[in-house]
Image (cartoon, rainbow, N blue to C red; front, side):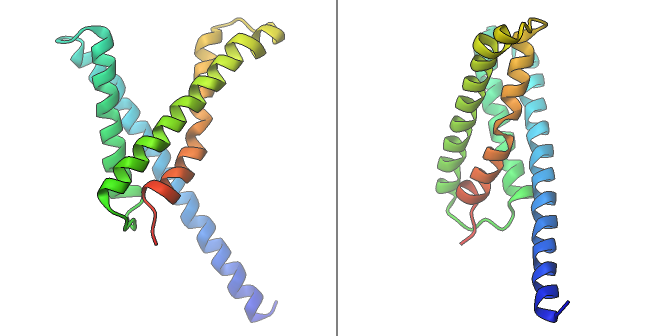
Length: 148
């Protein structure tokens, strides 16, 4: 191998490792934010009606995800905070829509055609939640917490 090829390969490997580590951190912070959402809803239900507790808990989870991503995952972001907040909301709105579309397609069309009925809504929602993980990561990397 010549030096040019080795240098190019090394840069690619370094970029791949960095991207994978960043993605793992993204997934872990997202999991932690989901836990904040889930458990805060339980606590909030002591004082709030169920539906209100769900909404407030979702906002707690979103705030947790934003802070953790900003501090731990996308530390090199240099765009303005108000742009980060705006794009964070847009990327998460897109993720919710992806989750909804995938979940509904599975439970209303795909699963019935396959004869799949075992906890169909739960399984469909689980798959629906997983679908936007990569698109959310890319959206947050290139829009929310971008570097110039």
